[in-house]
Amino acid sequence: MQIKLEGLERTYTGTASAGDVHAVQQVSLLIPSNTIFGIIGKSGAGKSTLVRLISLLEKPDAGSIFYDGERVDNLTGQKLIQRRRRAGMIFQNFNLFSSRTAGRNIAYPMEICGMPKARIQERTQELLELVGLADRGDAPVSTLSGGQKQRVAIARALANNPDVLFCDEATSALDPQTTRAILELIRQIQKKMQLTVVMITHQMEVVRDACDEVAVLDAGRVVEQGPVSQIFSAPQAAVTRDFISNLAPMTADDDGTVTHRQGMVRWSAEGGRYILHFIGSMTGEPVLSNMAKRFDVSFNIRAGGIQLLPEQQVGTMIIDIAGDEAETANALAYLRSQGVAVEETKQ
Ligand code: ADP
Ligand code: MG
Image 1 (cartoon, protein in one colour):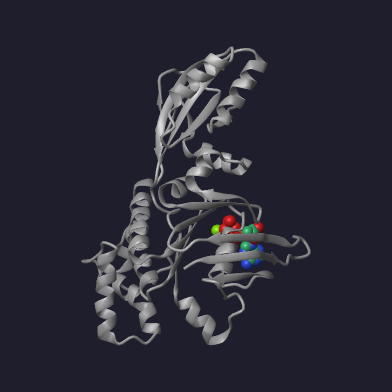
Image 2 (cartoon, rainbow, N blue to C red; image 1 turned 60 degrees about the horizontal axis):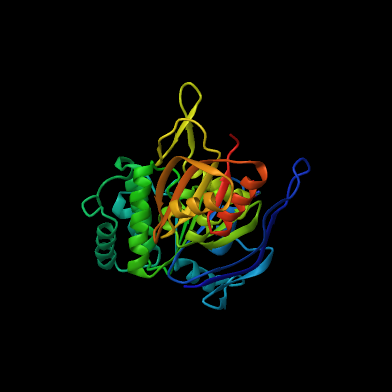
């Protein structure tokens, strides 16, 4: 299902001591059918508010929402209830009934719809299998790990055959390994069921590992959007660059020196003023030697590594450039003209 947002606005009226909060401002987006669309933003950026608007849990103050070309933000009564039932949702804290077993949690939305008991049992078993919990149907929720709880929540979200799945920080409470497993499961399910998935997150890892396209939300506004590979190779907004640099954070040793980045091989302990991102089949070495030939500069590679995106790779190199100020500026402009994303660190 394709989702179109036009000029969405949402303001929470404040108290005397705290003013109004303009949580979502002029948000227009086209979320294509049959993809995983990421919405990334820092805490307080308005992500949860936006997902409540898109999923029709809350009404926008202004703007409109279309599902497959049909306006849905003004639905009421039975039509609204019916439409909401065709959307699955999962959250950071799973929102499961702790007094029910895994299977009874999954059965819940089907019970609400009045599905016959035998059919509910059959479908619950199918869903347990789909999420890799075939033999845990009778397990009380309290005995499950975080990853297993999220699998139950995913199964429950899929119970009524949704055409869209909303994930609000679905992996934020999970460790990195479990996060990857859950994202992989969501990707598999997305393909199998041809779902549109809207993935809200504050983690660039989630965007990198799971999303096809991404919109960056900052203070209620969309500041940047596009295919994930494009955003990684040429981030425009400051907040996007921040997210990308936090992806592989510099980690300081006990003595305070910065010696490596996660996922990077560093062969020189010091330096590293520039971080370069190369996309796809573009390779770093020729671009750098061309730079050194064209301009009166030399370069020193301090570290390098590859980050895998769903469809392609982004290579990262940390380098220093030696040369006078003007030539260095020309060299950096040349790199950017060749499609290399250049970040300058504060070293
Ligand atoms: P995020 O999910 O990106 O952290 P939220 O959408 O939860 O951001 O919040 C965006 C802003 O709106 C915050 O300043 C938050 O305090 C405010 N906000 C969110 N929900 C409400 C609400 N129900 N009432 C009042 N203010 C709210
Ligand atoms: Mg939130």
